Image (cartoon, rainbow, N blue to C red; front, top):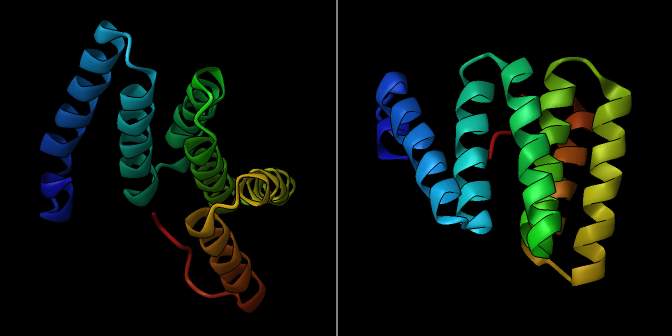
Length: 131
């Protein structure tokens, strides 16, 4: 994340990909989901949301498989943002509604707040959100 914050996208990508490989090799679904989410975010914020969508799909699948509802909600929110970036409003709406349902069910204030912020920005046509 430090490399990404410093704008070193090449180094950040290598680190995120290595983190994914290590987490998968260790069978750690939660760490793999986190690393995939970071890699997807890198693609999305660097102008390649089409590359982020399959990664966010994998984040959601890993979260569902491991029973991590918080990560599932975050993955759905991030996937919704990628859909919106790609002007797939139906996909964005579907994912946002699913994320809100999960966040509501588990009483997740962070995921609920992120969903509300996303809705606010879309309704007011502000700049796209990043997470």
